[in-house]
Amino acid sequence: MGKKVLFQSENLAIINEDIFSTRAIPSQEIDLVITSPPYNVDIRYNSHNDGLTYEDYRRFSKRWMKRCYRWLRKDGRFCLNIPLDKNKGGQQSVGADLTTIAKECGFSYHTTIIWNEGNISRRTAWGSWASASAPYVIAPVELIVVLYKDSWKKTSGSRKSDITPGEFKDWTNGLWTFNGERKTRIGHPAPFPVELPLRCMKLFSFVGDLVLDPFMGSGSTLLAASQCNRRSVGIEIDFHYCNLAIRRIEEDLVRRNADPK
Ligand SMILES: C[S@@+](CC[C@H](N)C(=O)[O-])C[C@H]1O[C@@H](n2cnc3c(N)ncnc32)[C@H](O)[C@@H]1O
Image (tube, rainbow, N blue to C red):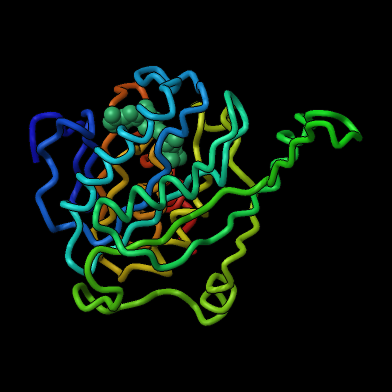
């Protein structure tokens, strides 16, 4: 791994670099990419402009997805957490558009999980109230689009699964309902809950697999990986978010060591 590796242990690495310039990830070694990219909805990140034109956002998305495609193994998988659509700054079919871009990058489509995050605060933009003049319909859900590189059947890795029969039955139902994460609790403007990458890892990867989050943020994916014995690597452009991730992972380890189940 290159010199921008901020933290490294036997099973985990944090790379403080731009996804577009990093050379720290070798080609075809990643088993599973799980990520929530910037949504381009004007979130105030420390080191990223989240207010591109939609055309530039599509170009940005294509460039990073191409890199992920190269980094994945032939039987590698890609869980892409994105909005269904966007209303702020003009209506856009973000979910459909980014799925199309992923396919243009070479990915094959497998399925889409609907994550019902119960975010009712978004239901304040009604458009024309109680009138057919110009109403807005907003679904309080996000997508986890599941794609793969060459073959859906997974042949590499330990072949050891740790998902319970109950979890398998529940999570293969493509409607997942659990709460979103609070920004103020984590100290990052757009974290997802650890539950999201944890489910993706247990459902779509083997124990010991190598998981990448190219927009690591506060490190939720790496935290999940450490909890279910996957190896992981996170890329994050912002130094402070990297340090936040390191702190969260270390605190979680201390907590689990103090209270092993
Ligand atoms: C939606 S957040 C990810 C949040 C993460 N899932 C979590 O739970 O904390 C997107 C992250 O991508 C980072 N980012 C934006 N542009 C980047 C780039 N070019 N290279 C690497 N990271 C970038 C931002 O700093 C932000 O932390």
